Length: 71
Image 1 (cartoon, rainbow, N blue to C red):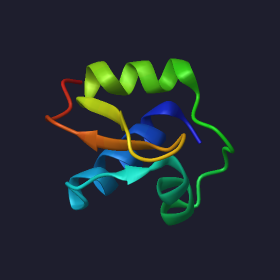
Image 2: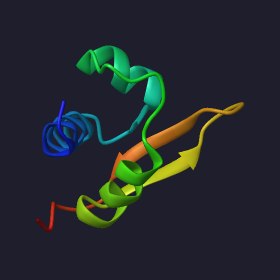
Image 3: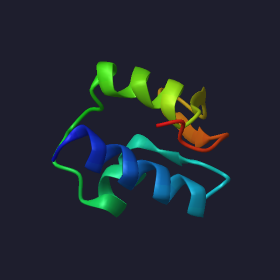
């Protein structure tokens, strides 16, 4: 899976779920081949699609998007 495919899949799913999803929920829903998100890609998502990650409960982070992709 390329970064562009990853970005589009994450963005599309998070736009459908404005309340946000955890990484595990995203991974399961999108059948992603990664155990953990790549920090480099995650940083790019923050800049390109407005990804934000906020603590939910325990160690889980809630992923949300706040804007449209800039690229």
